[in-house]
Length: 72
Image 1: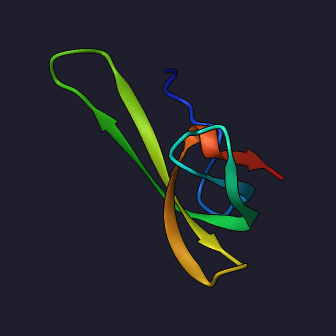
Image 2 (image 1 turned 135 degrees about the vertical axis):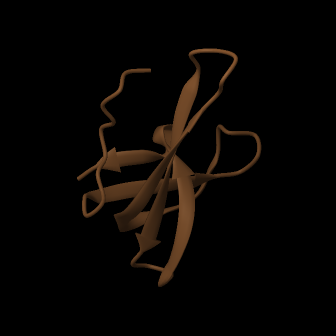
């Protein structure tokens, strides 16, 4: 993964919530990126970023990963 992430706080995104089978979409909507948190592992070069998204549809904040978001 590169050092630059495609989403920054304040970006408008479409989020997708899937069932545990990962193939079926449970819910979708539009929201704003509130914050991001990157996790790095000391014993490898692996890292990943989670994004906290304010969901307009449900009026709450939920954490998503990169695969569940599309920039609007």
